[in-house]
Length: 339
Image (tube, rainbow, N blue to C red; front, side, top):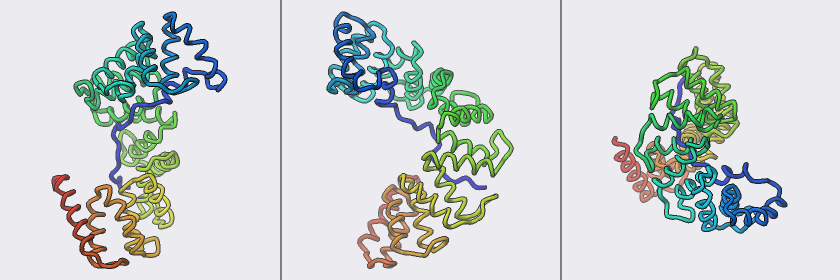
């Protein structure tokens, strides 16, 4: 079985409002009552009340959303060492919410919360070390903080540790350890981890190569919304590899699943299917539609094919101006890619 190109980096964003929801009562009545309870306590210097009030203003739960108030109350609580408030300040500086964006200060506040055991802060700090954002890039520090969060069952950190072990970044390269972390993350529903397990069984990395297991994991990941897994399945069914028999209908379905999520490889592949008529009735118009979508995302092959369709007038009126434009875009993309 052949593995196609896919995004497999840590590439995860800092969590936004969902991060704070678990610490605040969920009923609307509780939200309405909380300001009346929390504000007097906060004004008397209660750090927990100050932190809760800061979260409420940040999210607009029970009070009008107000970043300035969120910052003020979180600052008061953080100065007393409240880790929830420290996390909120890290979030606000990272995203420029109520303050000028400042990655260094974001890292400083995340570090304070991380040292007090906040798993999300630990993960975020690890991500900042991984990306070199607000701190000097350091894979070993990224691995340390990801590991701290992963030990608390943070699913994003477990996935990140799997990536680091697979790539040997900040830790010794270890395929078996990578699989273990991906399995932990997959058990918590991580589609990205399910995809990586598919890759592991596909290539036989730290396990006996197993096509059936690979396809099973790819399907789980795709069904949970992973566009890369859907694209890989489309490719497998389009070409027929290993135990997978060629199936144009299945290929079209999986490519379509990935393309709807903006996967440019799937968009280009749909263009190829319609252009060649392999597995679907041929259609130059449909081919152009999908090629153009991939071309607009910078896919060189799709840009050249789009140019050729306009150049030759295949299914559309011949348009030299459009053809020249896409030929130019393709040359530009090749230059950027160092080709």
